[in-house]
Amino acid sequence: MKKKDLVIAIPKEIQEGCRCVAVIPQTVKQLTSGGHTVLVQKGAGSDAFYLDEEYEAAGARIMDGANDVYSVADVVLKIYPPRHNDELNNYELDMMKEGATVIGFLSPISDASVVEKLRKRRLTGFAMELIPRISRAQGMDALSSFSTVMGYRAVLLAAGFLGKFFPLLMTAAGTIQPANVLVIGAGVAGLQAIAVSHRMGAKVEAFDTRPVVREQVESLGARFVEMELPEDMETRYGYAKEAPEEFIRREMEAIEARLHRTDVVITTALVYGKKAPLLITEQMVSRMRPGSVIVDLAAEQGGNCQLTVAGETVERNGVIVHGPVNLPSQLPFDASLMYSKNILNAFNNLYHGEDDSVDLEDEINANALVTYKGEVVSETVKHYLEGKNDR
Image 1 (cartoon, rainbow, N blue to C red):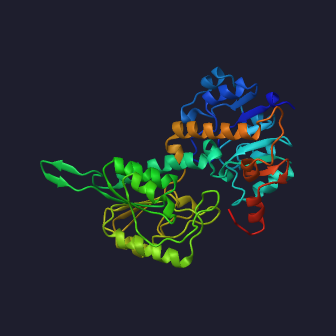
Image 2: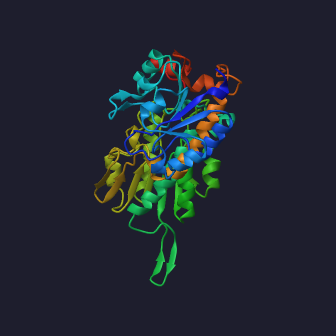
Image 3: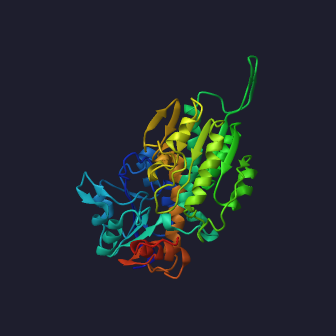
């Protein structure tokens, strides 16, 4: 099979609450100009404001149902992990022909059944979340794209819940002091939350277990919380490692010491493949001022706050704890645009030759390929299946 003969399918996402689409019309143009056939399920992009007519104008063929795109595709480009399609009473991967490829978030660590499905049907599975954070892969880093959306949106949500202004205001009624914001975790989401909070005029403090991010935090106008930090808290691929118990205890003490004067806390602390670390207890929340707000971006992984309930807003002693889920779908137009560029770059890296063969020696492919024609490739996935983790 020549590379130019690939049939690429973009299904409509069936994840509850998802309004995003994996590929936008502009990206379809780039795919079709390379000789590929692109099939788009009817209405796949409509919730993100990308209409079927735009896809057709870009050279795609609009197909009625999910089975129409899955069953004939050589490559499926999607966002959320494959799941059971209740409408068709069929699992998404089971609709694919043997030997085909799926590129998207696959959750091979949290859902081993996905790996088994890939193996059983001899599918090639490329997991966007396993792309290493190296310079050459920056254009494929969908986690960073979605984290950018989440960090930005978290501040707007906090401002909506908070009963006071973010900036310093000089009014006829007197001076209004700026809000105090504490951002826990200075990854992509945290840095975006810092930047937006600072632009809105708040006084911002930030904490992270990795001392290397101090300069980035300060460059965005925030104060880096001083604390003796352990060495080597970042993996070789740029992800935060799980901190020792003693360090987490001291971290919680440092956070608690600031909560009584903090108006907004935005938590973003995650450890890949594990439940989010608990950093704010119910007792700590009780010491916050009434009217304060916690926006917990780790809600979908269990939350950094003990009171967090994913998808809900909890109030305790006047303190609001919000656990947002699926935040990229609150900005679906730009979230889809960013992801579409990421997945195009991943596709081009996977199929960069003149045929449909894959370079398994390539560092990105070697890490992100869960399976290649049914065989498990990713060392990360292998180690997790064996109960190990060195990511």
